[in-house]
Each structure stands twice: as structure tokens, then as C-alpha cells.
Length: 352
Image 1 (cartoon, rainbow, N blue to C red):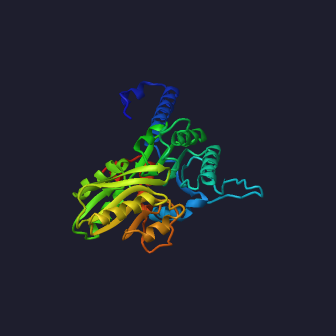
Image 2: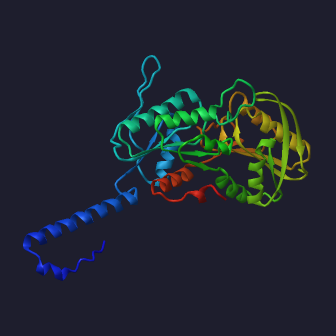
């Protein structure tokens, strides 16, 4: 900070005035330094990452990728089933990142909310929820009378709990970001899957969407891989039950890759794979961000025409089938966390 006061004028001031002048200059410089320090953002706020119980396997990988220690926390469970998450180290003034996927949503979601509340009450500087798999994302609209919009409700609950930011992966619908009143960093599994597909050495790749709703996602993969795209059109008899399905596009002698955000009961993806093989495809593989794998999903995959199925480890891996394989998303989340902490752009992590 510069001052226009000519120093030679000090010779004409009484000693007491000179001392007061110097003291004033010190106060001005101190105030300016304080303002600059606040503008810098993170100088005096440490980075700490904590895990809820269900996602510790992934949080440890994230911490390893950043070469930092996992934060100390505990979650005592009472005889009646209640639990009480607790931070076992100070988090005052820290950037606190809490990692937790929601399924099964009852206990896991409540544990995340209690961790957020505990962090706010412990005077954390900022609380960021890292939610690799955001449950209730399929409830993003009223598709029939007298139903809730679960994704909006969950966004409101997280905001009320005190979250300052959310980092997540492959939301079922992009518009869910608008349900929040805080910033949402939406990462995409395509940044992991596309380079992996390119290294597989398949010569005649065609991208397929298992339903019309996934057309935008499939088109993104097809554009990034510079390949053709086909669509499977389905009708549902009821939730998780497929009625009819047809393939729109040519798959003869093609190595078809089905892309989706979630594989739950695996009914859609396996029926699409079987139908594509019946239409003359050379092989069928599937890539999905989240492997929920409910009910008979693994059995359906084993009996289907799918050669391989790839997931990220956004949810605890299930290794009950030789066809099912996982690609870790830990480094991507680690890089996103670091950039959020440093107030740096993370658009290169998900805009491709």
C-alpha cells in the first residue's frame, strides 16, 4: 500500500505527532493485510475429509490420492438402533468434506445429515457433502398423481442441515442441480469410462442407450468416441418391470456398449443386451456409474448376453460375478475436493 505523504515533512512535525503518524500507518497496513488475507480464502482454513460408515472404503482411497490422513470420527449405536456420529478431532475453522453414498437411504442419509449438523455446531468453516451416489434422484418429477418429488425434498433437507456445497457423480437427471440452493459440482463417469473404452481395442464400437431417457448420455459417449449410436425403446408394465422393447439402429457385427447411470435390478440392461445380440451384434458390454444391483440383478447379469459390466465404486463393490468389474472414481473425487478447497475451477473434470 502506497502513501502520498512526503516523508521530508516529518522533519517539521513535533515528536508526539510523528509517533501518532507512524502508529496510524501501522493500523492502515494491518487492516489492508487483513482484507487481503480474507480475499485469499483458504490461508487459515485446513482441509479435512471424513467418512460415514458405509463409504469408508472409497474415502480411504480419496485420502490416499491426496496423500492426507482420513479424519477421525466415530458413530456409537444405541440399543434401540439410534446412532450418534461424532468428530474425534477439532474441526474449528476447517473445510470439512463428508463422504457418503445414500443407499440404503434410511440410516445412511440420516448419518450424513447428523454429520453435517455436528460439523456446523463444531464451528467448521465450510461443510461440503460428497455424495458419490445421490439416492432418490429418480424421483425428480411428478410422473403420476399424489406422489412426492423425493430429489427436491432431499435437496431441501441437506440445505436445512447446513451443507454449503455438494459434490456428486452422474445424477439421474441433470436438472436436480436446480433443486439445491447451494452450489452443486456434478461429475461424470464418462471422464473415466471413455479413456478406458478407447484402451479396450474394440474395432467396431457402437454406443447404445437402454432407453429413450438415456439418449443424451449415449450421444455424449458417441461424440467423445466418434462412433455411431443406437437406442433401445422400452415400455414399462410397472416400476422395475419391462413391458416391451425394440432396437432403433443397426447393430449387425458391432461391438455394442450400453451406457447408463444406474443399474438397479438389471432388468432393462440385460433385456437390451439380449435383444441387441439377437439383432446380430458381435458383442455387448455395459458401463454404468452406479451399481445398485438390487434383488436378482447379479443373477440376471450372469444369465444375460453381456460380456462384461463396468461400474464405478460409488457404492460398495459386489464381486459375486466374474462379469462385474469396477473402475475407481477416488482420484476424480480427490481432485474435485482439492480444487474446491483451493477455489479453483473444476469444469475440466466434467465438461468434455
